[in-house]
Image (cartoon, rainbow, N blue to C red):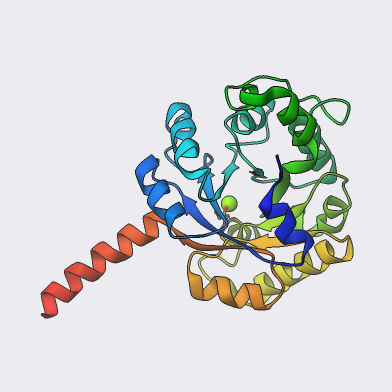
Length: 247
Ligand code: 3PY
Ligand code: MG
């Protein structure tokens, strides 16, 4: 199968992605066409249903690596999005090493885990898919609570976890700094980056805008978000109204 995201990380590079929440396969296709490494389909907070997700992955997969943020860390949430053809999995709200080990088990076929074989895309060439999936598919867990920050080193040490991915907004609520980020938040973010690196793992962070993505990339983060679909539409729509009002 081969996973270009994995190759990029191994070379010390930074994965870029667009983040798709509004549940439109066409919008995801348009974003994929612009050339990011990956498109992330957000099943935790986004509007995707299963048929729409399968359709959208079919549209983007020859342009960018499809990635899914699962709704949660249940067997079905993880297995079904991998069956849809995700090349990487992002699991939200992983607070402990024990939870991270369970994520790895659910994401890997035996003998490493307990993922069940099936799904239309894996079945296109099931011997090759099942033979390669345990190695090829990247597993990222989200660090987005004070507890997860405290446990970040232990989580990073879990075999099979490739990336710690920081959710800055949930983290700000958990740390009590919301709606600001501030110095305490930044210290937590940097401590997660350091914990990941100390264990030879990559660290990513949700960045809603390209300028923020560039700053985080310069700090050594290896997975950043260039744009998300709701933000693009919302900013574009507001900007049009503002320009018309002053024009
Ligand atoms: C967060 O910032 O909490 C996220 O999950 C970003 O998607
Ligand atoms: Mg979050």
